Image (cartoon, rainbow, N blue to C red; front, side):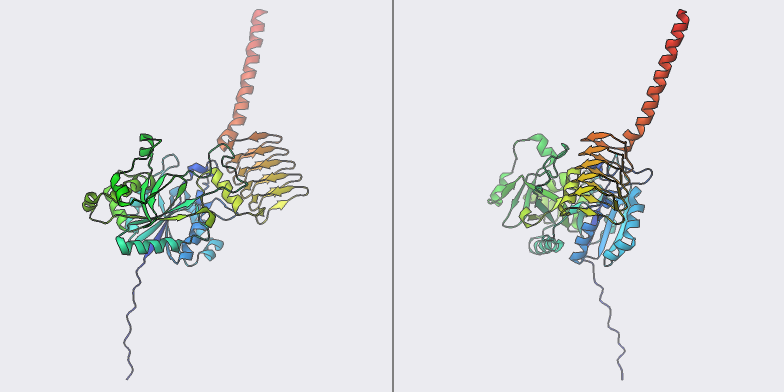
Length: 439
């Protein structure tokens, strides 16, 4: 007699969900300014002719995580959704399920990470990894390394978060302050215990304002961790592996807006205050992984110098996108040129990033510039260390240095000139009236 008993299917519970945050990118203006009525999402800005979002998505996929909650502003949904479902992206991340959700905010008033997580807490049922869309990890720092550290710590001593900090050294060809708009990276003073891999202190804006020249550390911290280390050279990747209980804490601490500036400094103090831990009925410890610069290039592309440096790092000499035409006697060095661009004759481009559909007319010179989509540069124009908003037009023979060029400034120029002409005509007419009166 045959046995027709059916073996029940075992339900596999998700261990983690990756939460990727893709904000407006105000720190990258004018690149992220609107092109007409169309937004220019930070997450889709190209790095070595590959959208920024590709890097964290690849990192997640390589770790074996299958589910991603991708959160972006409502105005960016259409562009990001189109990219996710495009043929190239679908093929690249076929093993990952992406749940695209939007958060209503404006470019002028962006919500903090704590507020965003509270809003989507009902969609996060398990432990999660919080990842910014602008973190570019090296091959030597697989996401599985953070996950394994988190697994070990939560099993051994009830760690609630594992954070990732990294050391950054600028490439030789990128200066620390190339444009005078700040350096690619801004380190944060932290204290940690290297024996247990515990983050003990994170400097907050409040602490900095209170005492800019000294760190105030509790004796209870130093007595419990006598071999603690201090560094002011490490940067926060803003990648955090979190227990689901983090969302419960955020629900109770409604005044917190920023994870980095509000929540984690408070959480660090809570680690060595046992009476307060009892209040929240949970064990509190923050694990830490530190990635050294000698082990591979890591960077957060969260400002313009970092954006230029990231593009330069991933391009050995020059990268030219598909369907771009370069005319005779033009030279391009150490630059990334996007798709469907037209480079005229006798053009010189050095150390630049040109996004898609840019047109560079004959004889133009570009040095250390970033040009947004569909930027047009006139004949024999010269740009040095400039950034343009998508759709900007540089006039023939115009020379500009160290400027952020956006459409509002460019569009206002003709109106101003017309007003000047009208004023001059009015002045001439009034002069004529005066002459007639005198006659």
